[in-house]
Image 1 (cartoon, rainbow, N blue to C red):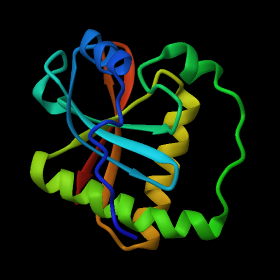
Image 2 (image 1 turned 45 degrees about the vertical axis):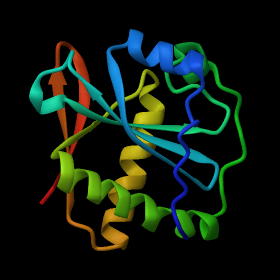
Image 3 (image 1 turned 180 degrees about the vertical axis):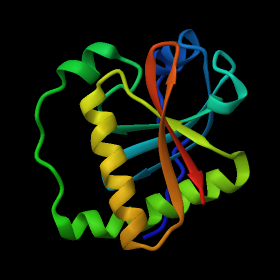
Image 4 (image 1 turned 135 degrees about the vertical axis):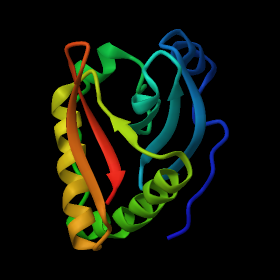
Length: 148
C-alpha cells in the first residue's frame, strides 16, 4: 500500500491549535482512515523535540475534549490492520533515521497505551528494531521511541 501525502490534512483551526500548543508540522500522511503527523516542539528539551501524533479522520488531535470524550468507533479488522501496519512502521523508521528519537504521548493515556502496544507488537511481527522507553518529564510520562 502506498502512502498518500495530504497537505490539507490539518484544517485552519487545527493548525492554529497546533501552534498554540507550541508545535510545528514537519510531515504527515494518511492511511487506512488514520492521519499520522510528525511534529516538532521547541517547548520540550532536545531529547523530546519530535513527536508522533495519531488521529482518526475527523478527530482533532489537538482538541482535549475530542481526545478524552470521543465516541466509540468500530476498530479495524485484523486483516486491515496488517495491511496498514507495515507502511506505518516503515514511515516511523524513516522519521527515526532522519530526526532521531520520537516521543509519543496523548492527553488521553488510554490512547497512548494503545499505540505503544500496537507499535511494540508491530515491531516484533515485522522484525523492526525499535525500542520504546517511558520517561518522566515535568510530571508527565512520555514514551521515547528509538532505533536499537
